[in-house]
Image (tube, rainbow, N blue to C red; front, side, top):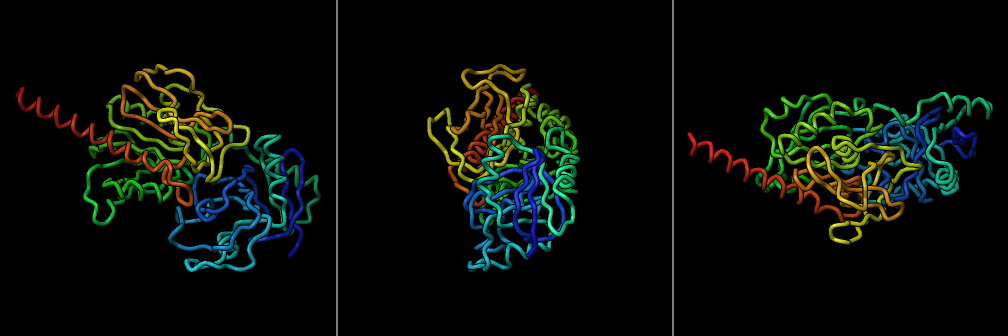
Length: 385
C-alpha cells in the first residue's frame, strides 16, 4: 500500500493510501451522503466523469453482485472512501468492491477523512478533482494537472452513456400490458423500466438522437425522459423532442436530468448548484399533499422556476410540485393544462427509500386518461364519417 493523494482544483490536497486501481483519474468532486447503496451509485451512468466521495466511513462490507447493477458497468471516474471493509459479509455477494473497481480500472483512495472533504466542498462549492497513486509528481504538478481538466458546466455527456440501439423491457411476469412507453436513454438506470414494468408498461428504450417521428410512429402512450450526466443546457435536441410531445398532448414524465430538460422545454433556465444533492436520504416536501418524502438524489444542476406562485408557459399554466427542505431547490414541476410532470429525484429508488414510488402510478393515470381521450376522438371520427 503506497501513498495516494486527493487533489482539488483550489489547491487543497488530502493524503491517503492507494486502493483499487493504481494511477491517475480526474472528474468533478461530488459527495454522497447515503449509508448504503454504493453499488447502485457506482453503476449509475449519471455519475459518469465524477469522482464520488462517500461520507459514510465504512464502505464495501456487502460486496458486489450482478442483480444490483444499474447498468452494464461502473461509471464513476474515481472512488474515495475512509475505511474500506477488509472482508465481505453478505449472502448475495459475488465479489468484493475492490476487486470490481480494479477490474473496471477505477482509481480509488482510502484513509481520507471524507467528511472533512465534504465540508470543504460545501464551503467552497463543487470543483474539479484528481486522484493520484503511484506517482512521482510534485504537489504543484498535481494541482496543475487537475486545473487543466474540463468542468461539468457545458459538458455534453449523454452521448457517451446512451444505448446504441433501441430495446424493449416487457411488463413484469404475470402483469398484462396496459401502456406503451417511449423512454429516452440519457443514462437510464435498470430499476426505472423495471418499476414501470410492474405497472403494466411496455418500455421501449431509445438512444439519444432518436427523432420525434421515429417515436410517434410507434404510437406510444407516454414519453419518459431519464436521468443522466452533464449540463442540461447542452440538451437542445431532447428539449425540442419534449416540446413536440407536449404539443401532441402525449403524457410526459421526467426524472433527474429529465426534470431539468422538461424545465428547459417549458422555458425555464437551469443553473449549477453549489455542491449538488446526492444520496438516499434527501427530504423533499410535496407541496400538493404537504407530506415530506425521503428521496434518492443525484444532481448538480437545478431548474429556476418560481416556487411561490403558479407559472405560465406556452403550454399553459403549471406549478412547482416539490421542493427540497435542505435548501429550497425546485424538485418537481407539473403542468395544469398538459399531461406532463417531473421530479428532480429518483422514484425508482434502487438502494433507497420508496416514498416516491407513487409517481409511476401517476404516470399510469395520465396515460389511462390519454388512451380514453384517444378512443373518444376515434369514435367521433367514425361517427362523422
